[in-house]
Amino acid sequence: MKYTKLGNSELNVSRICMGCMGFGDPARGQHSWTIDEAHTRQIIRRGLELGVNFYDTAVGYQSGTSEQYLGRALRDFAKREDVVVATKFLPRTMEEIERGVSGQQHIENMINLSLKNLGMDYVDLYIYHMWDWNTPIGDILDGLNRVVKAGKARYIGISNCFAWQLAKANALARQEGYARFISVQGHYNLIFREEEREMAPYCVEEHIAMTPYSALASGRLSRKPGEAGTKRAAEDAYAKFKYDATAQQDGIIIDRVAELAEKHGVSMTEVSLAWLLTKVTAPIVGATKQHHIEGAVKAVELELTAAEVAYLEEPYVPHPLAGVMAQNKPESAKQKHVWTTGDQKV
Ligand SMILES: NC(=O)c1ccc[n+]([C@@H]2O[C@H](COP(=O)([O-])OP(=O)(O)OC[C@H]3O[C@@H](n4cnc5c(N)ncnc54)[C@H](OP(=O)(O)O)[C@@H]3O)[C@@H](O)[C@H]2O)c1
Image (cartoon, rainbow, N blue to C red; front, side, top):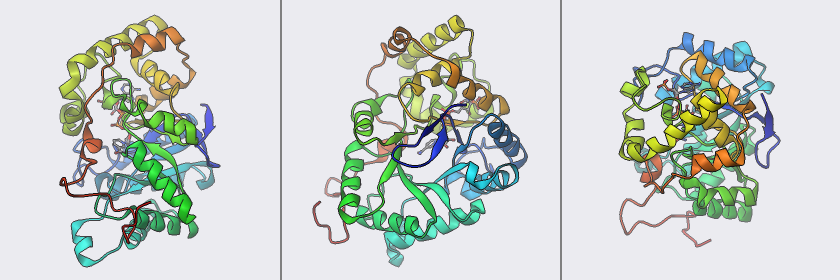
């Protein structure tokens, strides 16, 4: 394994982050294909053996059971200070808004719930999971700053946002003396490269870490089209929604991944992740089987030539936004960002 600093932080992370969205009780959440605690523990144990020290979960994954399984496994198999744990909080619900729960109170409740689920007294990285159009960003930043000051999170990160939203939020945090976002978890892989237009150059400029999710396009970059046959491939409607519409065009790139994998005598997973590793700090890879994490870790050793990188990139055409990012927009033409509780312009 290789390690690197996470952006402007003191966190030393493995170049592969284990995505924990596939862990948790399948009866208690969005996904029917998640794995139980016994299998989760085997995968986390194997990841630790291979040097993976960076783990990504969320309070929203299977009603907190992903956090619970991860927390118990890390407690049994690792020392707390040897691992970097990231989790995410959800937007305020309409019910909270009606009850008058502020953005700050919401974040305090969310971190306390995550820490309880994880059985930990702090997380290393606390991530704003998706843009909350109904809560002033000033309140979110204040709430996050309080969490950092209280020692419940070492750093904060953001996910599913536009570069300009992040730039404006970090400018506001700087102005108010709050903790700033040190990492961004966007949707980025060989067949979905919209982050390259604005986010990637902005992150280089500000030394913000990119830790992209769905690094393998939820498995599509690990095998030839039609070869799936897995429970996830059959049941993951959310990934189908993200990728099915562009499958024909994406197939050209996937064929090139297969071609280079054959040439190097490695798996398609290794080629896909080796490409992403040339662009970002640490891709987040989902694992629901032991061989998934073993294959992902091998990618760290594969070096692609500049010509191979260009060959993989050449067929890409811009894609419409998909998944959570497609929902990052006002609910009506009249709705504007609310930056501070007083709605002052920044
Ligand atoms: N912030 C957000 O909004 C957000 C959204 C999505 C995900 N995430 C994070 O990102 C993580 C990864 O996302 P993801 O699961 O959608 O995407 P992924 O990493 O692109 O895909 C994981 C899938 O790829 C296949 N795979 C993985 N390693 C393999 C290997 N070595 N050989 C063959 N196949 C392999 C498996 O598919 P099969 O099971 O079909 O074999 C696995 O389920 C999540 O766990 C979560 O932590 C965050």
